[in-house]
Image 1: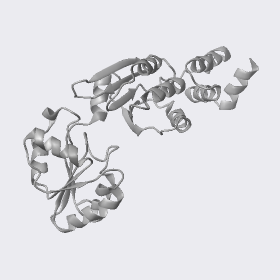
Image 2: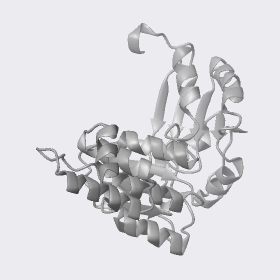
Image 3: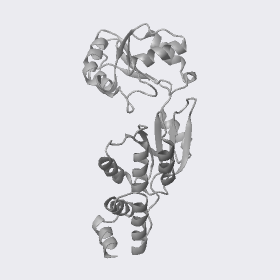
Image 4: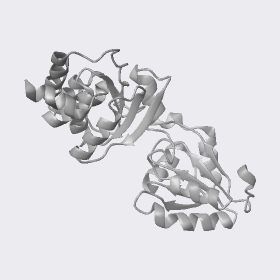
Length: 286
């Protein structure tokens, strides 16, 4: 064990990478672990049972629900199972557990208690969307879900406006249009991105283009299903400070894309490494 931690018995945690939608992506390891584990902690027990049926396997261990609403409460029970020597498998609705899905609390608790954690790796919406986006993938960062409210979402995006790495986000279908509009207003309507919907499923769709165009497409089509958004990193900043008229034009462009003047000024200041009050003075002096 790492750092001299001794295993407290034969119990261990196995994080199981489940198919994103196409059961043909299920690995042999996944089948083996789900069949032999003593306990299977599933984000949705009904989906687990359906997956097992589709794969032609039987989950012989005890099935327990393990999702965001009960994760904190159920974790001590699962650690107790580990102390009894159980192999505890964690499976989510799709992709790898603990990546914006249940699992992290159990991983941390198991390690703190001295139990090993391993994985039966499988599909990930993060890397799948990144690879399909057509955007640079040599360096990227995963941001998970953005805040639900518009003001908090825009505030978070302003913090990321100058991030040079490709950005990957998850988003709910009922918020995707508002989020894309905020992306366009804060990052600029011409920043390249990709909306990846229903990956590996029958109605898989990858929509690529500038953020402004993607926001319009989303508003007109109301995309549904599991959605991952990939956004190009910020371009390298100019060697010299842009001319005053260029800064004013950049603010006006963001306002035209739906941003408030305050947000547009903040976004331009962040993009060019300037103080907000400097850009504010330029806009209002005009």
